[in-house]
Image (tube, rainbow, N blue to C red; front, side):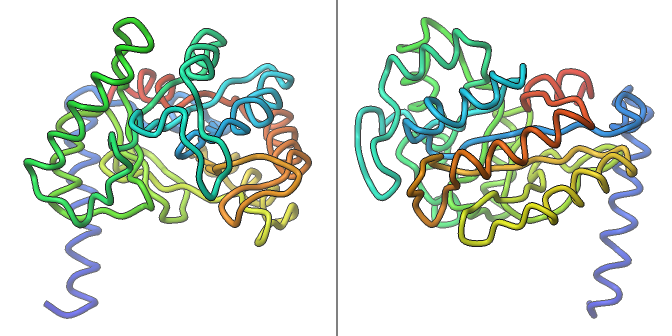
Amino acid sequence: MGLAQSRSFHDFARKVRRKLGQLLGQRQIGDIWAGGVVSFTFDDFPKTAFTQGGAILERHGVRGTYYTASKLVGTEGALGPLFDAEDLRAAHRNGHEIGCHTYSHLRCSEADRPALVSEVRANAAGISAILEGHIPKNFAFPYGATSPTARHVMKRHYASCRGIRPGINRRIPDTAELFAYSVYAGTFDEARMRALIDQNKSLGGWLIFYTHDVTAAPSPYGCTPEQWDAVVGYAAKTSPILPVRDVMAALNV
């Protein structure tokens, strides 16, 4: 199959999925949020993602989604200290969504089906033990690394799976790999972030941002509090901001 044929096939498949979704009662993003909706998410859950990033969200009266690999609780790495049990409890108590990475931060593209299922079960058990029965409903691929097998396995266990491919999620989104944009200090462009938020508003889509640590001297995968506040603050003036779980619940997908 040539490139043009492949694109035509995928376009046709998306139209079929959208039509089936409508017949099965799934709702389109623009039907619910004519002016679009925005979500802010954190990967790996560095401590500063909550103490700094979460505090900024809360100051604007909104909440985010924390994709958590429970084996990493209490550890430290290139992102600085990662979350501890009390951080997880506090974020949950404050109304943020606790989502799921793989248990050990496994790269899904390199794992087979049994390993992926084992990671799902281990992470559910680890988070549930800390949060007294809470089971995460939404997932993000560590490193953004996925595969057909990983997409299939994770979609069976979670309401949505978020990747790192840039794009605005429109109409009935592909919940096996939601599009998202990074907010990283090294590539930060406030004008571009604002333009994305404006574009999402005009399209009636779902715009997801992600980062890792939020600190004055961030890793290559994080941003400063000022940068995070600039994006959150602008979005808060123009669009509803919701955790991934709330968007998925409203879409009924």
